Structures are given as C-alpha cells and as structure tokens.
Length: 200
Image (cartoon, rainbow, N blue to C red; front, side):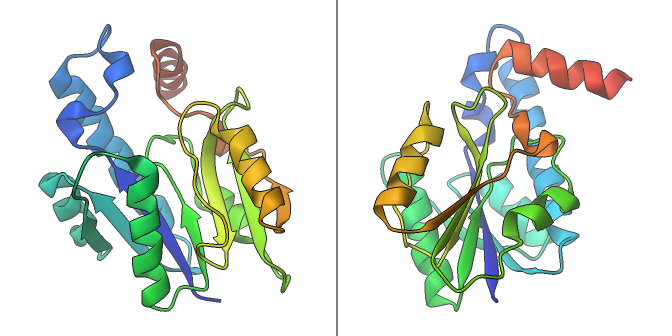
C-alpha cells in the first residue's frame, strides 16, 4: 500500500496565536520550526510511509521540508486548512497514493510507533483511523483510505465531526487513542505540560 503523509504548516510567524500571552512571535515561530522538524524526523523513521507532503505558504517551512526530501505544495488563496488538505490530498492521489495520513505538526511527543499504529490497516474496505486530542475535542491525526473517501472538518470540535463524516461515507472507523498523539500544543496549559515533560 502506498501511504502519503500530509503535513499542513501555518506560516511560522503567524502560528500558535493562542500562545501570544506567553510567547513572543519569534518564540512561537521557533516552536513551530521545532515541531515541524520533529514531525518530519518521526515520519522519516517509518518505512511504511512512502512519501511525505508538506503544504504551506511559508517558504521557510517548505525549504525545511525539502531538506527531508518531502514533496512540497505551496498553499495559495485565502487561508483555509481544510481546503489546503483537499488540495494536498488530490496531489497525493494523483501521484499514486492509496491512503493518506493527515498529521498536524504540533505533536511534540509523537513517535514512530504511534504512526505505525495509525496506519496499521490490513483490510480491504474504505477505512478511517482517528486519533483524538487529550480532551477528545480535536483531531490530532487522521488516516483515510482511499484518499478523498471523506471530507475534512479540522478545527475546534473536529473529532465528532470526523466521526460523523466517516460514518456517513460508509467507512470502517477505528479510534486510536495514543499518548504520543494526545497532546497538541495550542494553549498555554498545553505548553506548560510540554515544557514540564521536557524538564524531567
């Protein structure tokens, strides 16, 4: 099976706006670079990932992705995460992907083992694997086979929306609650958890 990982990346200097109370724009940009590097490192350790595609309007993010030999797509038009993911999915499908793994970058504890569990699918039916965040509100990873079988609904409350969309699409759904994929660093409380873990 040909699996493409799709990694959407906001412009570094405009990322993590909900951390503005505790981090400067430069600090938030540095954190975003760190997280992207970690995501690309992890994906490079998983042989079953055939190719990684990074979609962004940030030239620095795209340059970093190319250092990891990732395929890059420049986002254009009004910023819209779900539209960007649809475009990236079409690109991956056009280049032979049998499945896609949508993976946000801000998962600092994600491991190669986590990714392997997300993509461990041996069935023949259309399949969706969803990894919720620790609050079971958002979606921290989404595996879809075949690509484009269901629409994307990332944003606040996306976990339930993705469950509904997968069910309506007639896909076999598997929930994957993984400690390494549970923490996404969006708000100061998340950042505190991440920093405390780093200091241990």
